[in-house]
Image (tube, rainbow, N blue to C red; front, top):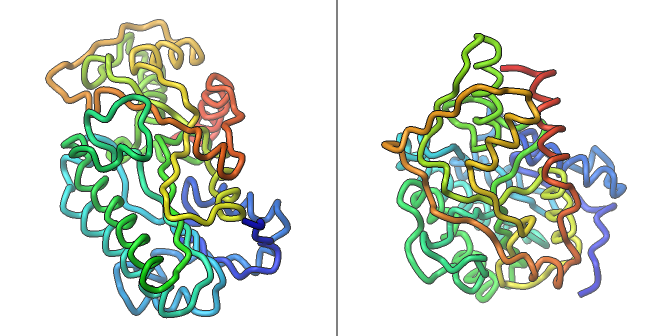
Length: 314
């Protein structure tokens, strides 16, 4: 496939003011896309659960990068499974259909590592996506996103709509959400340590056993991957986006405590769920198809994230 030149394209980035989206917008601008060619609908102005608003935001666009999502950590997933399923599936389904009817040239849909089966062989290969049911605490969110892959393939087959589907692992980095009700693993751990230091407490309490493993991708690397795929990828097969490395939550918190100079006790509440037992992606397809491999060393990314949070405490 010949790479798409984005410079003269009218691009819609849903979620473009958010954590990942703001970095994607910066990457697009660095590629030479004029800022005025990038549309970022704000939730206070457009509700993507409303079909009329979806139809309005796609008008006059050449390309859509759909990053808007309702997301959260394990606690939020347990508390709001219905909202997470409905909001994510309805936003994506309506936007893809509106794009088809508006003759959009390309649609980039973002899935989630939560779509993978609970006991998928590690590392997760894209071909294993349908080999079982997702981990229960995040299944509604994961299945809502995975349904968009079915729609993407169906619309490519029937209407010729060029939809690509990307599956990122847990992201981290500057501008992440540190709200305890919604944050993912790394910002939640950083905030727990910072709060303990601020209050003078000599311990932190964490969910689970610490034995579960996760893979993390620095947000700027993720943004680069999404833009590369937008430029160079044009197939129906989903593509993993990750770093290809795995770390236990126990080792992760030890690294964070070291970087933040916290010497207190770590107490594990094993009555709380670990979530998926292991998570690591096979990232060979992304490298093969559009030349993406993660560049940011994990400790460097953590340092930058901690520094950003200390400048922007919440």
